[in-house]
Length: 141
Image 1 (tube, one colour):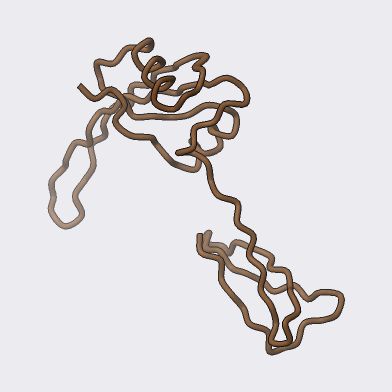
Image 2 (image 1 turned 135 degrees about the vertical axis):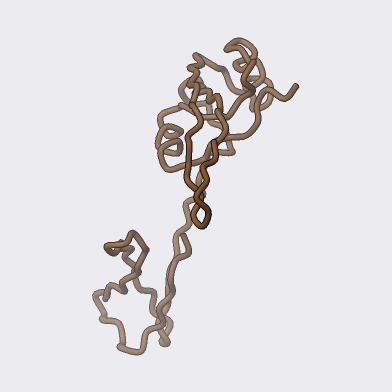
């Protein structure tokens, strides 16, 4: 029996991961002590507490056919680890991107969101002033 099925990586779970709470999808029959023991062994962390959420499946409508289907019921475990311990699966790499002009001068990039939530990048002119023929690079998200 597989107790830990997968980590749940969403915006909300990544915010929780910064505070030391990690979210996993677990087996429906798994108990809190089993989950705590398995997370401690697999990731080498000290587990303080485990909270369980039983998420009920939803009825959804199909797009082209007039029929409904039922999504699966899942069980989530919020695992709190000791302060200072981290699970590497939930870490996001921090990458700095520098763009240089044709003359070789580094310039700053400022990230900005538009109305639809897409990322735009604006080139910020430095103290020396960037030439109008600067190369622009979009940061992938």
